[in-house]
Length: 75
Image 1 (cartoon, rainbow, N blue to C red):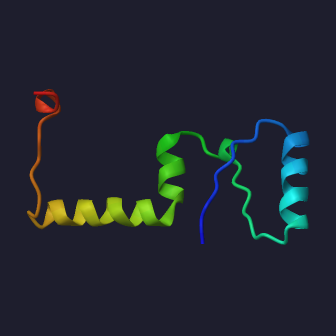
Image 2 (image 1 turned 180 degrees about the vertical axis):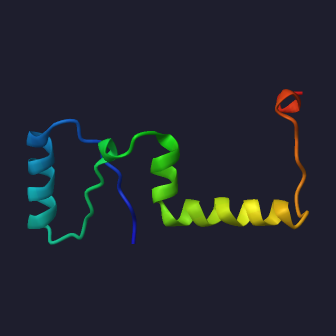
């Protein structure tokens, strides 16, 4: 299986694209990006990314990581 991401800006295009996908009997999901207040909310809504972030936080609490000061990030 492959994933195709199409950014749709208007409802007319959305209807046309979904009609084509329906005609081809392809499964698809519509994700309304405007439902999120900010980027963090969008990321945390993705279960895969949320799990990775949670695992990273847990690893840091257990001492399995290296903390870098923000001012040292670009050195």
